[in-house]
Figure 1 (cartoon, rainbow, N blue to C red):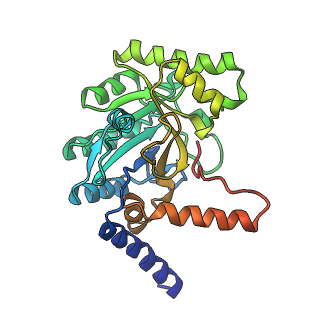
Figure 2: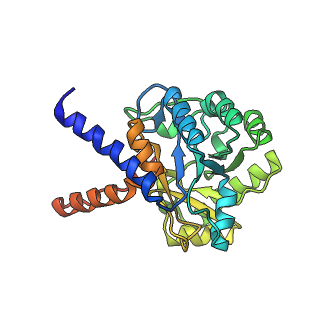
Amino acid sequence: MPIAKRMKRALWSGLGTVGKALHLGGVPILTYHSLDPSGSLISVSPAAFAAQMEYLHRHGFRALSLRDYVARLALGSLPARGAFVITFDDGFRNVHQIALPILRRLGYTATVFVPTDHVGGSATWTMRPGLPQLPLMSWEELAELQAAGLDIQSHACSHPFLTTLTPAEAERELVESKRTIEERLGNTADLFCYPYGDGNAAVAELLRSSGYRGAVTLEFGLNSPGADPLRLRRVGSAHFTSPAKFEACVWGMYTPLLRAKLRLRSALSSTPPDPRRGAV
């Protein structure tokens, strides 16, 4: 193995070790999309996902639902450490096939965000080089996830860039997706995931007026106790490219390093880097 690669591996391994030793605070909201072997920016292999969940379970992490996280955030009572949240964007069928048995076995919950117009279809918005166009779960499969303790929430209706829509069009995406989930599954749909991570203050206000209590972005990082519940950061799986990097992420050590890297890249480039790596 080349020396540079060995040094990089040692760095990431060391960051995870330091994070554990320092007892850093923060509850990571993990972002996953598809569990498949394609190696795309939005994909995690089934074996890697299983290993990541086993690692968390082995180290005593407990899974909070996003609903519980948002409620605790409002009360200022988030756990200091040892907890995490799992989210899946888009509702790929492989979440039902692969993630559900693993989560059941470990006693973990998760929140799955679905674009309601595409339920039972395929992810047509991923039709670009390097991204898999895979089938999405049906309403029956989503109901099975809900019965197993997972939470099904809104990813809008059509998976649009919300900031490009008129206020009326954006409001329809939020209101209709919420209504459809509640009618089809009988649960309360008051959590949201911005498609492509695309949102702004106007969209957040529409979410608030439409009855949403929390919303997640694709901005990488942990959330401070006073974070805006409608602009929550997450820890994206595009960065889980090795076991050591995953460990650095969940122990809170990857975030400051990534932000420093982005600041340096921004200083050296005329085009600011996008912290939402893996935005689909």
